[in-house]
Length: 400
Ligand SMILES: Cc1ncc(COP(=O)(O)O)c(C=O)c1O
Image (cartoon, rainbow, N blue to C red):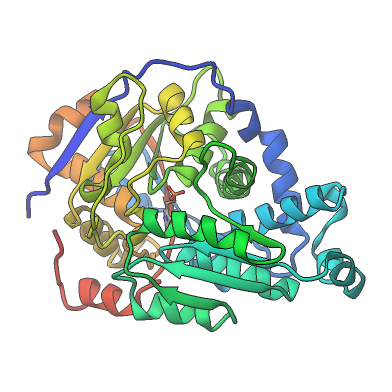
């Protein structure tokens, strides 16, 4: 077995007043879920129970939420993009989100009332695809900035939705800054970004509430309390939404929640190492194949939720996700196979490594992973870069 470079650190960060937890409650998330239910494309994505794999890895249960089936967009991200745009419009027009279901948003009257808007976003691919899809549904303009190194297929997917897309000579965090200045240059320009900064917190919060629909579906489908939830983080909005959701669902007995990052962009892990609660920003190219996780600046809301509720943080090289992608795709014959992309399979790869590698026994023991464990994963994307997916799965190409 190839040896992975994986590090784990337990969360000893100072606790805060936990101001965001109630915003990820079942009650709040149900509002977002009802909004999504109004879309004709909405369908719960499958939660796959990998029984043989659980036996093989020595745990009681392994379930993987397969987001490759979300809205035909191959990732969960539209859950946040669409909800945040609707919440923004509701606020701007003095309406309640409950009065803005899909049928109203799509109506001619609504379009006339709204006039024209330009939605702008920086993205590694999946978030922009969700924003572009929503803008197209609403008949509005969309401008998307992508970081250098973006793959052609991720660019093409967004372009096909009618957005104006560019690949910038900038990293992800720099693209976010550029997008935020661009918004001022357009009449009715709206920046739709999943990372929060001072003075820009509404939209990221709504994005997280939209993402939490995924956790809400999974909790229901799981049918019992998972003992461990592994979540992958880029800026930490998605992971923060799941951590907040499960912490508020099981206030007395929350699952152990483990945040997983690529070691090239492990801002949460480094923040945990630093230990005083301040954020750590990772800069540079962050050239991980886990494109969706290659973000160096933690989002404020996610970071705060991690401080209060994460059990620990994993940082590992790209081999982690290559392993996860292969194990999910080429599964035991009794288990359903899952097409999971580079950012989608990171957590499963981390977990499988922790269970299989002798050198990681300490981590396994510290996390109390064993026959009684019931583990939940989110495969947050399918083969959003199909060429690389084939290279890894079919050609056996490894990345470090
Ligand atoms: C497939 C996928 N998974 C996970 C994430 C991480 O989400 P966040 O940046 O909110 O941490 C992303 C972000 O783009 C993604 O595209």
